[in-house]
Image 1: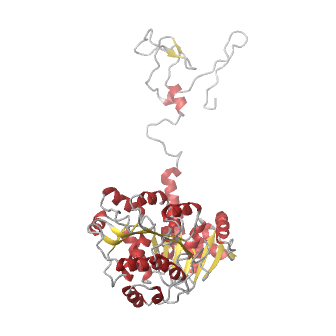
Image 2: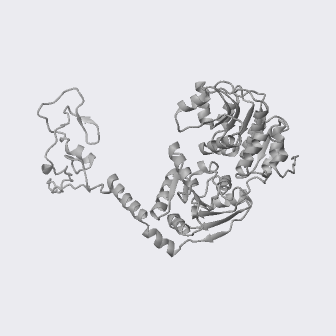
Image 3: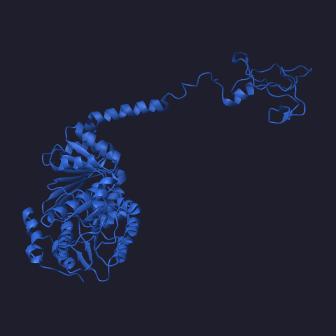
Length: 501
């Protein structure tokens, strides 16, 4: 049975004074539902199973009680170790969580380190050398450090698994089980997920102690109520034109555009730039520095559009995102919920637009089934205006020209070119041309007892060896066919051989 707490202010939660001061500095006075329900349970020392949508304040729901417990029991962290371990699926989310710990714990002198891939190991090893209070890490890079013994987890007192369902989507379940083997059994576990599929429920039962404190502030896989949603049916080839048309609206001020592929993200960002819209792309092929600069530019308002793959669906925490555009629908229905959760954050409203091509209708059907809603739709197929815009887009013309050049380079004129000194005849006919007749003798004489000539059907006869010296092509007329003798014993005139024979 779920516990319910009716609390209206952070001062009612019994948090340390240094935390309340930090919250006041940030202008936070009232906890969100997930915070009001989760914090008392964590302060009591119980394990926590939290189910909440993205953007509901989950980070503070575990960061605040963790910092309170660290302040109540101050002691040095073990060398190359940590007192608190937080696992995150993406670099962006790991960085965001670490910043939250630093912000809330700025009056406590808490030490925080972040470990993720895409950067060199040296700085991370130096940061962990003397130990830290809080370590935020992605599973892959943490396993690398554990293998090198540059990080130890024997002193972990509290373990947080954030965005567990995305861990499942990204294939991190087995790495998580490997990491857990390094943790001491006597620890407090905090488990957060936006959805609870079967595999995640099984993982939660493995990690959590019996009778955990359960908190669910919204039904599983539902979308944020403050987000206005709509679907636009459009051909794949005209999506870029439709996107540029949407950005002509003045209220499209700070927009995140989601694509399924990295190359698609770069292509869409390039199209927006060509249309005069400041845009930046962020995905797994970008270096960590490039991703940080793109995200910083978006937060600062220097670019209107941030084009991202699902790697950023839960790692971007930017206030005042006005719209989320799903340029391509996700293959995993739950990802739709996390994508649109990038808007309508911190109590604000937002809008979400999804493009749907004919081959994406099954994906839309799955999304509506999982989210238990029918999304309002509009049909822009066969739209003449979009057709004209698509034809006029300069990058479309450049792509067509480039495709034509690539086609020519890959053999568009195949059949007109042939290697030098190569006969025009088919290979089988070249072999037949260079083979002497059965009765002919080579200049070097015959070799007796070693094979002999080949019959036209492959059997050797006589004792000759076939010549390897080619004859002049101009003198070659091909074999002649013998016809039955006509009456009177005379042979019929020979018919000239052609390749059609």
